[in-house]
Image (cartoon, rainbow, N blue to C red):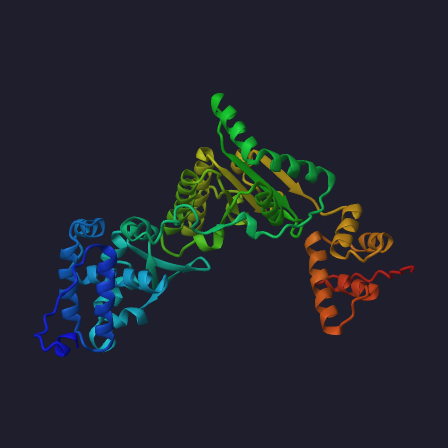
Length: 432
């Protein structure tokens, strides 16, 4: 338009591609042409190769060249990176990949290689299957951590990946007053004191000086609802330490050897985070029953062998741990002896005593009199988690009914209904 206004010949000036960011900006334009049917797949392939030549000296281009990918697989990987960079898309389905080809139809050879994991992109550790509930989706893919943090390092997209990725910030946990039995309270307070920033560095230094392991591995075990996980959160809050939480069910995969790789990645990631931060976070294995159980001797089934391999990896990593690991479990009798020896602190969370239950009742219901709290505590043997459930249900009823006064009969009814399959029918009387 400027040329027409000035009655001058139009000269098309192509802006040079100076780096990886401008490369993907240009690739994004190509995909817009592709989506508008203004560009064929072949033309897209040729243009992309030309753009790669412009950034041949970049770490990204040099690494791709070293892998020796065929042109089609190189384009497919660049397209997956494009989805991650432009749309923050970490779940790439076949329907997404369709857009890369003419007539919006992914070729059978490409689909078969991805489904069977024989694609070069899997062999070069550039992509992996999305893992859902311990099962790998054969039709859903994402970039590997290596691809995000190494190949894309020039984009500065994953600067926080080594320090903040998947971390739960300590100040995101609301402060809660937890009620413990006497023995638990003493151990939790001691552990919180040791894990404070100043004290922990001193303790680690002195352990190293005498040739002892400097890592702290702790086990919180006991009945459900006794405050094991919440104690970890409150310790993290009190000591200012973030949490890297590991859900075991998401680590396990249906692919042979991948579960073990996933477990190694967890500890690798934790080590990288510890190196890049001044205050080591807490590595939390929550509800770790499945990995702390006694190992199978003479295992023959693939599943049993996989379980044993995962446990062996964890045992080795615990020996070399430099930071803080806490595992929570409901196991009380079937804990593998090898794990028992490696846990420095083992804190048993028993069901609350009558006195502790009374304190929990009053913490949940400040308007409850001490006498009524003691009556509820003595009549109903409930855990702290169960009492918290009751308080939440009571609050819902209060909101719906608009009733703010304490209804003791309703509380008693909620107590009786809290446990499935129980028939608590104590008659309870309250004096006002």
